[in-house]
Image 1 (cartoon, rainbow, N blue to C red):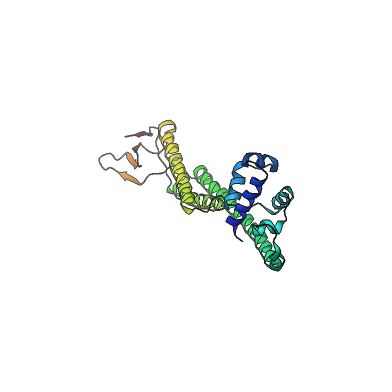
Image 2: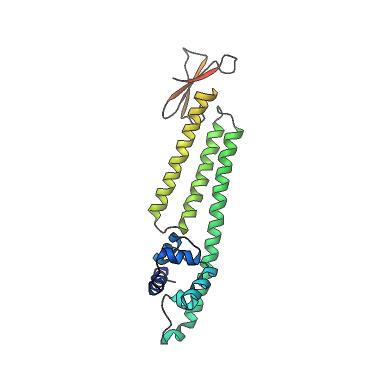
Length: 226
């Protein structure tokens, strides 16, 4: 099944009716981007929408699947059309499974991150470890979810990189607020050091600053940025 050919055929049908993508989207109750993805071959209408499109343009579903109007040699290709219809249905099933899996990965990743932040105290390394693992699940889910939006792997990788940067910024901001507003040590640090000259202090090194935990475990404890 040639999705690009089908997309060109859909665009040709729309042009024949002298419709813009916006006006067609309004008639079919979809978004402009959806029409664009159909006509560029990046995505395909689902079975229900395929029936509605065929009825709207006055063509048959096999004609849409083949990406051309019925011709004299079309009858000889009936078997090929049936095969393509089966392939189309299979692709729709696969697409549905991918959406479900990507959604579950994103939800599971968020659950792990939020659970890690809620359960483990800031001075426990397990909170940052589980947050990192949850982030991996989340980013994999985002990458899979974008597969049906675009075929360009670089675009998907750029989107995942943007999500990773957003997570990093969120973790950094929550750590900064924990130190400055709630007197807690930063959770996401790369080193914890002990200075023998100051036995009542622990230093937590992050990428942007160093936090000092003074008199830990006592009523005089405090956390500040060095």
